[in-house]
Image 1 (tube, rainbow over the protein chains, first blue to last red):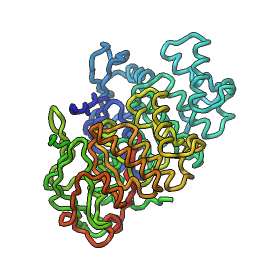
Image 2: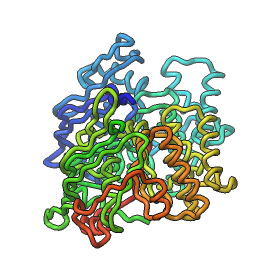
Image 3: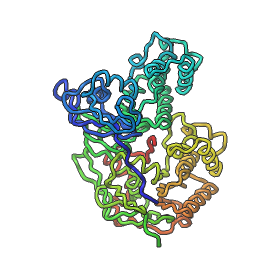
Image 4: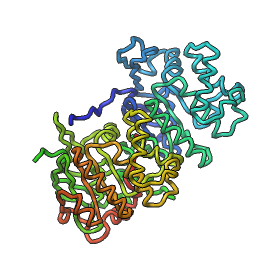
Length: 273
Length: 257
C-alpha cells in the first residue's frame, strides 16, 4: 500500500492575531492553519476570547495586529484568477471585496438565529436572498431551491411563505443554516450553533450538521463551550483561556489525553450522563 | 516473512497529572512490536495491565511520550508520534480502523447509518454503503427491525455488534480490536472470528485484545507480552491512570470523519 495523501491545501491562516479590549480581554498570539475539508473547534469558557477570535477570522472585526489570510481557490470569483491559489490578506483588501467574499464564498451561522435571518420576510426569501446576491434571478429556481433546502434541514417546505417570526427557536436555527449553506460556501463559521436550544432539538441539529458537513465537504470553524458538541463535530480543537490558545490538537487527544493543566481541569469538569 | 506494516520502538507513555501537582505517572516503558499485513497480534498480560493504552496510542487518542510508532508503506514510512493533528482524520478514514468495546452513540443516527458512515466518509455511493452495511448487520444477527433505530436504547451486545459492523465495513489495512467479543453470545463470537479470518486473508494487519481464551487461541498468530513494559500492573491500570489523572476516560472516540 502506498502512503496516503494526508495533506490538504490550506484554506485559512491566522498569523499572530491580536485583538485586545484590555489585558487578557480579547485574543492574542493566535496562529493556526485551517485545511480544506477540516472542522476546527474552538473551545473555552465564556470570556476566553473565542467569540472575539471568530469575529476577527470571519471578517467582522479587524485585529490590532496580525493577519487573516484566505486562500481563494478554484472558485476564484472573488479571489481573482480562477484555478490559481491566491492568498488574500482579509483586512488589506477593500471593504467591498471583503463583503463579496462573505457573501459568495463564506457563510456565518450566528448563535442567535435572529442575527442571521430577516424575520419579516418569508422563509423562502431568506433562503433565496443569498442566491440572488450571487446573481440568480429566476423565480421558479429560487423557490425550488428554497423548498429543497427547507427539506434538507427538516423544515416543512409547505411553510415556505411563512415568516421566521412564526417558527420556534430550533426551526429558526435550521432555517439560518439553510440560508447559509444554500450558496455552497467553501468556509463556514459557526458560533455556538446549538446554544440556547432544547436538548432534543440540539441532537437533531447536531445530526444535521454532521451530515451536511460530510456531504458538502465543508470546511468549518466552530466556536462552542460544549465539549460533547466539539467531540461530535470537530476533527481538531483549540482550547482557549484568557485570550490565548493553551492547547491544540486532534479532538480525541485533547479530550482523552489533555496535556495542559487548564485542559485537564476543563475535561474533568464535564458531567457524563 | 512479509515486511512489517506497523512497528513500535522503545515506546513510552507517561501521563502528566496536573491536578496532583504535576506528578508524572509512567505507564509504559520500552515497548517493541512488529506487525505484518495479514497478521493478528494479540496483546497478552494480566487483566487491567493497560492493554488498551497501546491501542489508544496507535489510534491517536493518547499522545506518544517517547520512542517511535511507525507505519511502513511501499513508498516510505509514516511516523505516527510526529503526525500533525490535521492528518489524523484522513489516516483514520483510510488506514486505521478501531473497534472499541463501547459504541459512541450519536442521538438520532440509525444503526444502519452508524455502520455506513466510514464508507460515506470516503465518498462511497450511498446505495452501495447501504447494501454492505445491511449485509454485515444481518451477518451479525442484528434483528432487521433495529436497523432503522438509533442504537442508544440497544443492549450492550446489540451495540457492540453495530460497532463491529462499523469497524469492519471499511476494510482498513490496520484494525485495532479492543475486546470485540466481550459481550457476545457464542454464535456472534463465531461471526466475529470469521470476520477476523477474512480480514487476515485480504491482508489486514490487526492488533487486538481478547479476554475470551477460546477466541484468542483461534485468531492470534502471535502474542505480545506486555509484562515488563507496563508499569501499573496488578490493578486495573487503565482505570488507575484515569482515576489519578482525573480526566474523563472514554472509549475511543470517532468524531465526525
